[in-house]
Length: 260
Image (cartoon, rainbow, N blue to C red; front, side, top):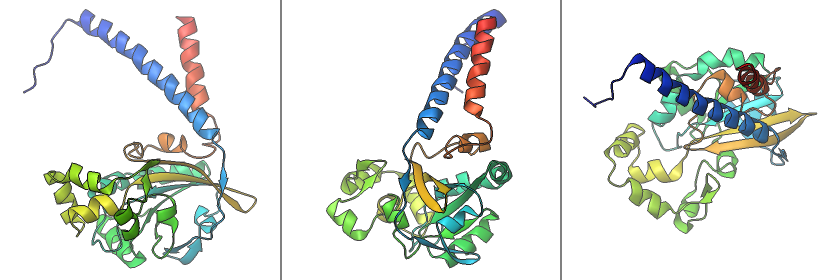
């Protein structure tokens, strides 16, 4: 068992108050990041992407399902795989509970994978998920948003992930001795190279305005491994909810500090 310092209640309270100041600092910094995230310029989507859904083929605009904001979790599931990434699946297990809160704030949340739709639906039933889960198989969507990499890209080291050029040989070398990564690859029905060099997780946000779709934000591992609470997801949506939660929280801290 790990040894831990033991102290008096007074010592604990003093240490806790010091930590509280750091937590407030982190919250204020997060509020600033939320504002900066929403001030990013929007990029018009010019390409016509199509996705296979339970209701048939749909465009990116149709995936908004009548709302003005769309959050996409890029769930790792390669076309040749037999199952999705276990880490991504663990995160996705928490999405169903957040959907109603997101929808009430004019945000649609879906998962998109590169595997064919039939595979996704088989896996979805196995996992008991009810959130919208669609396939980008046959389109450039995953490649354009940096979460899938073609054989040519891997051979020529001509791809970016998390806004950096990927050295696939180095990535493979980094995980070569990892039993956990090898086990994860096997659970997906692929080998280590297929697991760590063909697909990656991420989160992308889009806005729909006057019939035009805009890309507003993307993040990738480890930044995409967000806690799937509806409030944190809303912080990554183009406009968030009806109320500016971040501003309210920041003002509450400022008022409390002024009163103290």
